[in-house]
Image (cartoon, rainbow, N blue to C red; front, side, top):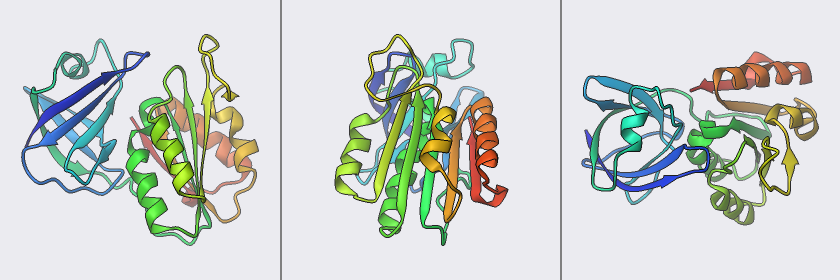
Length: 221
């Protein structure tokens, strides 16, 4: 299926955001991904959100040596590319837990934009927490702050790891704050998304806190 680029926004780190309009009706479950195809090459990309007016958003990591991202980065509003899907099972599951914690770093926050919104609507009685680590760009900052105002059960903690960026808030890698912000495992489950190294180090800290494998769900990009 073809999707048409409506908006392109570039960030300080070189990563970029794309809002696209699919040619056909598209349905997905927040947390799923699509395969983006350019020529003979295809790669998976998480859906940052698919909104009610039918657009599909992507938050893409720039890889100069990549097979697809350099081509996507050069595309402009009006250009088209092929997508297939959705695929994947990294979605918000039914749970008896009292708190759901989402932990992301960098563009790993992409699937959480839709997942957290769904969790807030489905589980108004549960505490929903986002712990996000970034270097230069606090992706979707206004969106997260608007959710905090709208939903009393939602809280976001953001930590900047760049010493060069002016930032009033937490400093350092996201893993440095987990023990203090999560504290205990009682009645909680966790979703983690980021690079393989980030997911590995985060799971290590979560295990140290006392989380069991069944309480942790992960997605690597």
